[in-house]
Image (cartoon, rainbow, N blue to C red):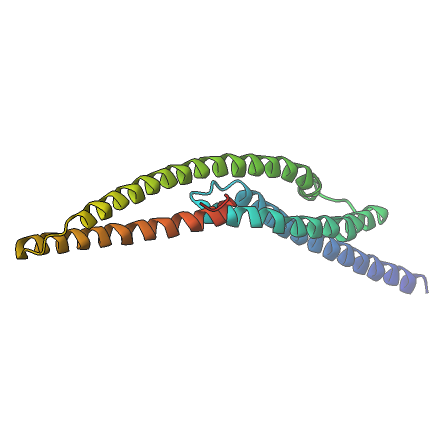
Length: 202
């Protein structure tokens, strides 16, 4: 009976260790996955946007990432922490790598705050830069339109119907039309940027 009892105790101990190892392994994989998600979030947050569309996408991502960060914190508190607490309550010897990983996972939320602040500065600076570019484009467009108005006024002043003059007037009309098409395209481009940058429309 003693041998049976000893044998059963060994089996139970082996099963207990197997269970604890499985919990530790699950926790390790979960923390690695969370670390990857955190890393992807901070990398995206500090990616320098090159134009108004990328800036808008970054602003939207920063807002959306708050949901992901909240979910990751819930996972940490509801799953990772509970598993570690369970392992420690069972006097399981958590290895150094897992302890470091646990600490890294624990410290991610504070690190993200720093990256979020950097991202906000980056977004604000890029928005100011892009606004200056749009203002320059607006001024250029205003000059183009004023120039077109002068050309149209001069054209209206020419009343000759001589064949050579008519040919000349036709060329000028074609030139004005091309310039007008370019101005319309530029105005459309500026309008899109104004929407993305939330600049009052000109």
